[in-house]
Amino acid sequence: MKFFVVQPYGRDKGREATVLYEAQSAAEAFTEIDRLTERMRHTGAAPDSIELLVVDDERRIIGRYAH
Image (tube, rainbow, N blue to C red; front, top):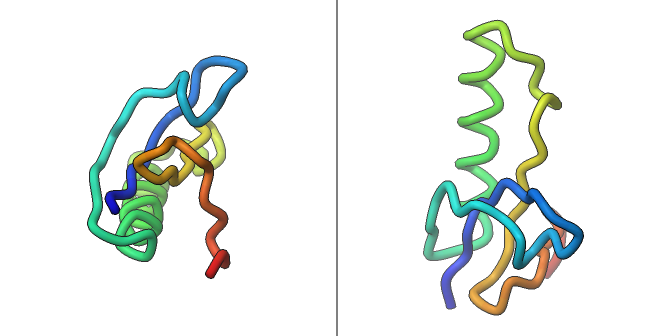
């Protein structure tokens, strides 16, 4: 199973989204979100200025603490 960091743009946030990163695990995808958030802070952008989600290969949204 693959996981993706996405930036949603439509009503169906899992399917109507731009893929930013592909990962082998949900943990890796969330680490990428953390990296992107830190990079945004360094450039002066508010970390919550864009929405980033992790979805699986069926485009289901994965929560950070889901098992």
